[in-house]
Figure: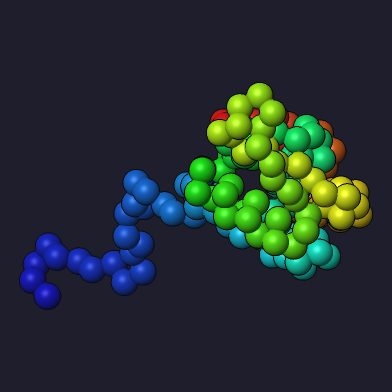
Length: 151
């Protein structure tokens, strides 16, 4: 080695400005993946998260247009159409012409769909509880409030 040149054998490289593990998008994706695993394991009705969202919103809000249901569940037009097609094929939802505007498709739960929504709701609540289990009650409330603010 030349004079004035020293090598630090255990020197760490400088800390990068962007550390993936500290980024909100990466953390949210990991939390979402964990929640998805819990959901798939515990929903108990062979439903996807989007199918459950549609059933739950219809149980909550009642019949509505397919477009409105898509907005209420944060799904684009193509996604909500596919979800409703699959739920209708299973006999859980039905569609009809909207009495106020025949061009619009109205979606409602069938009796079987309402029964399934009622049966699965406790599982869905337990899934949310397990997802948030690492937090205490005040942290859960604050976390959900903060996430809601970011929508």
